[in-house]
Image (cartoon, rainbow, N blue to C red; front, side):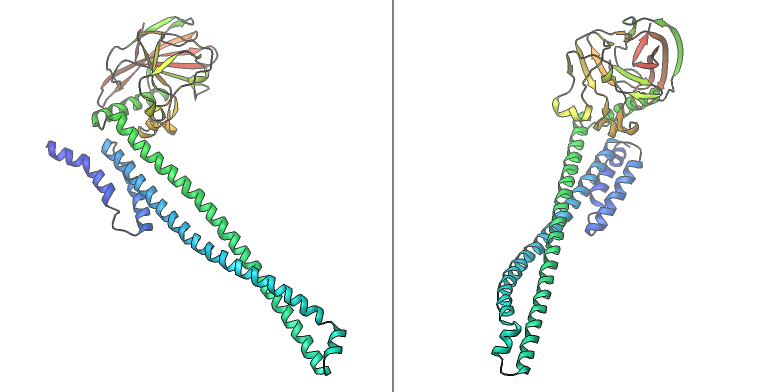
Length: 368
């Protein structure tokens, strides 16, 4: 049974790598796009997510190869055009000089004085006109070649920009995959734990908790304490701090004042778990020193674990003290949500409705 389960978990990775390998370039692109969509619609497992990243990396690599081939072909055409333009320009310059000499010698008086008969005058006059007409055609061909050359150069510049973007996309996909593996340590249980926490935070953001009014509170008042260990939708002690206003999500960095803090993860994961930049006036809900477990905003973590608009809706933090304080005065509510998954149980939280219309959530804590 365990063997079958392991085989099931790793099937998507094999499919993602091999199912599109025997097709032409364009067909492979379409196949990889369809495979990525199929995987994104499946139930979330770490192996599925990695397979999806592998598809996206293969897709980006294939597009880069196609663009580089187009650039190489265009570069060859441009080189030929440069040679043709150089030859045409030299030939035209030479013709212009000769035609100018011929035109001067082709004046009516000169033709009459140097021709043996009227027929010779007419013949020489018509010849001069033919030469001048041919020069006009020659000039038109030269101008057409110049326009074509400029167009090809513009196309090359656009392809170079597209190539740079594709390479940046590829780097981002590779970095995202590496960050996911680093964050989860390639462990399915850790991945499912992060999903459970994400779902719980989304549920609270959507107001799905059962809430009870407790009392009015003042700024800085102790409102409860952090749960000391793993609990519903949480692998360990931390506070999720989230701010709302006018039914919309707010960036806590706009409200919390600047203080000294540290991160619980290395700089290599700053882009994945996010960073903070507090610039407001509120005191923090925990006593210093404070350690940040996750920042607010659009992060790789928020993308991988299905947050709405790929945005982590708050700041996750912890401190040596478990006491939680109200950042502003208001009405205190106690709330809870039932969690399933790897960390089943009840997620408890506090909600404070401030007089200014701002609503603050303090998650993974008991209200006192």
